[in-house]
Length: 296
Image (cartoon, rainbow, N blue to C red):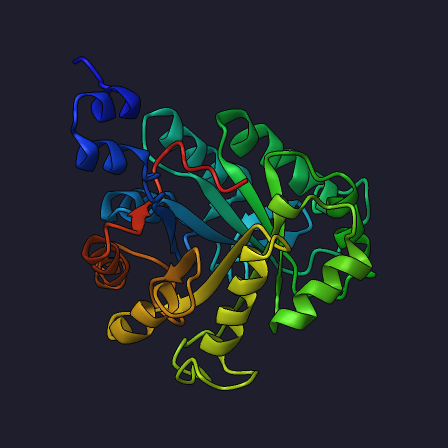
């Protein structure tokens, strides 16, 4: 196909076409639908079949190593961390648009450095599985920043990894400035939410504290170049309006969706559909993140 430059169009008298060609095309924002509590390989398959482009996994240490486990009771584990993360990595190798995995790390300081349940051992597993397939890793810490595990991950963070802090927008910025000043901006993520996203959600107009309001302010900080991404959690079926407010008014980058209080399975698609439907209705500004929309 022959493309005519704006200058040539003007010389031929097509001023309207020339002016249109000079207007930059608005770039759409990639949205991440993050499947919640994916701790079994069957749940990985279900989430990606539903359309998820990111996954959240709970990781718990036991004496003999790390497990995909939310409750930490041993009998509730969906498999070893290596088994489940390796399965995720293979899905990207096979063409699925898995962009990143949010690592919700439980009790990261339970074990010493040389033990199989140490944070170093988990980091090695992540590098050996997700890292080799190009799946990005998001480290989520819900402990204080003066812990050994936090410092290990912060000081060894590579370009495939990012960190996230959960809280009100000012708290997030202060935590990065004070405890992780050398982490590149693009690898700084802020999140806020509730196990049931309706709790404390608000209407996006409050001055502070409420979920939607704080995320809207955090997104403004992102747009001001202080953060890389802004995420929220956890939407279930029936949270349609709140999902629309988060992606629209609050202008965030992604949402953990699924069941509020249980593991992901093949019946969690309705929560995904809320995200997908809103993106489809706003194609001029949004798109579902694809394989090449790596978040950092």
